Image (cartoon, rainbow, N blue to C red; front, side, top):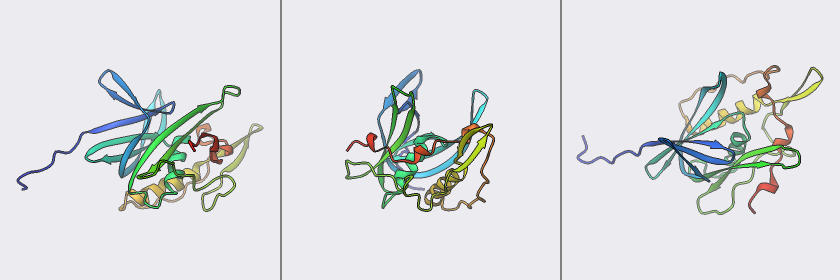
Length: 204
């Protein structure tokens, strides 16, 4: 038994809402623009909100002993942007900063969400590794037509991102079999334009 042991920091849960990082402390809600540190662990859990089930990525971040759990719903632009940016890093296990973004087009009402990842010592966020024009080894979206409506299924893409994160931050995890594309649940579908890097949103 050690004579002196450092006290471990408490875990703070962080959520994203409309481009802000939300921390609830008692009855008080605080907003932040970014969270930084070293990613220590990533896990995926099933959550339920108003009888609807959805999957959440829990990103555990260590900032000099202060521990944060950034919770990102998987089927969102926040999650895809986070993964696509982090993939460009030469040292994803190093010190990074994660900053969410939320944009709403006043004319069309279209909402664009993403997360920017910035490495220590840089003022510019990392660009996306994959775009619609350069897909590399990222699985293509699967196109379906249901009741005359074209939808795009991102099931296999999300599996790709999840396995990549687990390979980095969960060394003992066993890769699962790739799932088949789905054709029924609307939440599995995204607009292929979301794969285009949001150049207009980049702060440089």
